[in-house]
Length: 118
Ligand SMILES: CC(C)(COP(=O)(O)OP(=O)(O)OC[C@H]1O[C@@H](n2cnc3c(N)ncnc32)[C@H](O)[C@@H]1OP(=O)(O)O)[C@@H](O)C(=O)NCCC(=O)NCCS
Image: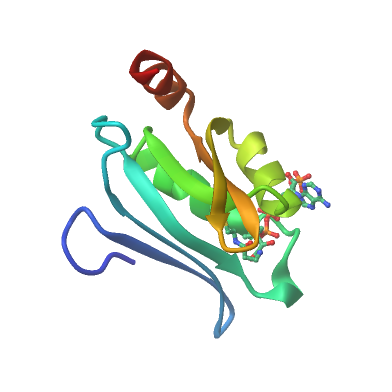
């Protein structure tokens, strides 16, 4: 499902009549490089570890091969998922969250962009 401006994407995963997961993304540059920013992804606790988030992210990646997002350094599930999808750590952001550091993870092309930006 798509809503809003063409650059904004909301995908909802359903099982039967239940909405069980979602991803929200919109076009936003990282270090002046055009890319898709995934602002939120979530799967209902009763439906996790069944590949739903993988499918949602793969659907975004199929349309937008350059993609980035913020994640807490302690969110091992999400970081494991992103690694599995080929995303890499682009930047570490001390105290990005009130109580924890953050990571910017992104597709490998963004590693080059970050390296060139210093
Ligand atoms: C992160 C989240 C979206 C993953 O959803 P999901 O549908 O369970 O994910 P999938 O089933 O597609 O993928 C699970 C993958 O997560 C990773 N993973 C799962 N458990 C893990 C663990 N204990 N340690 C490390 N990685 C783990 C693995 O890479 C796993 O892939 P595999 O099954 O092939 O090994 C879900 O846990 C969630 O909604 N969390 C709360 C919201 C959140 O943290 N969102 C991300 C904010 S950046």
